[in-house]
Length: 93
Image (cartoon, rainbow, N blue to C red; front, side, top):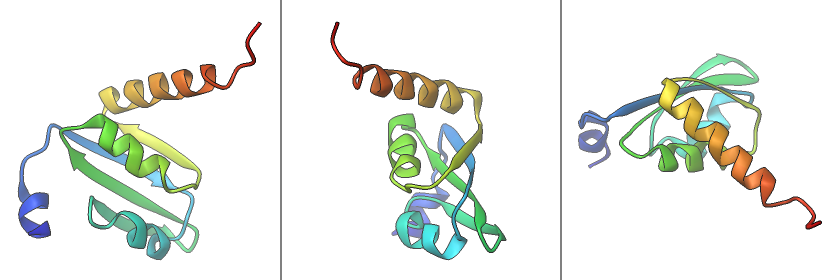
């Protein structure tokens, strides 16, 4: 089943570098994308999806430093989500 899901074309190939070991990241999101080690403390992640919200949720749930490399739509979506979340933590005037 997972193989068929991964083989389906997706609108957004979300790519990121994660500041956590590949083995740990694989345990958390391997059902939803691919994880390749860079070194002992970081890895590359790709989540092919039609939902930028889903990719944002998966990457955000990692609780590790992340740099999103693309596509541009994913970067814009995650920035906007971050601004909304940050605004929601501001003290009322």
